Length: 208
Image 1 (cartoon, rainbow, N blue to C red):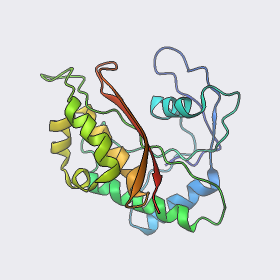
Image 2: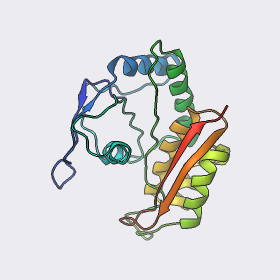
Image 3: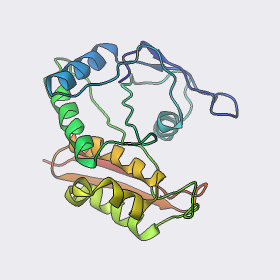
């Protein structure tokens, strides 16, 4: 969990992206960390850390490249790289804690939750280049209308359906669990391939 005052864009090999640094929502970040500990999570708390394309790209899609970002951020990292990665159910449970943190926060700020991670893709091994477009399209509908099957899937199920790197989709479950059981799907887009990756997005809002 990030609790920093400022987050700099990391250089991922082509020079840092030409975007401003991100201002941290420090007080709310600590509030969320405290809720996680109360719910028996053991977060790694980062006072200083750079942020990669998983944050940079969604922020650019929302806001372009402003001189200063109009929002403060709380970055949440979910391990989808180093074995063993969390279970989908564990990510869902974290989303429930995030919702609790938002509901118990005394401020009146509006909150946008971004769940990031590539759709189906695999970058190495015998299935390098693997993309599963039908599964990707079903995900974009299902994460809104019926996320329960994705919450119940095993980690092995994710790798089989979406590829080894497609297991990043478990990060979307944090976002979805923090929302109402029923949501309105405002926008959906899908494109494949994007750098050997299924790329898509949904915009959701809580339904009454």
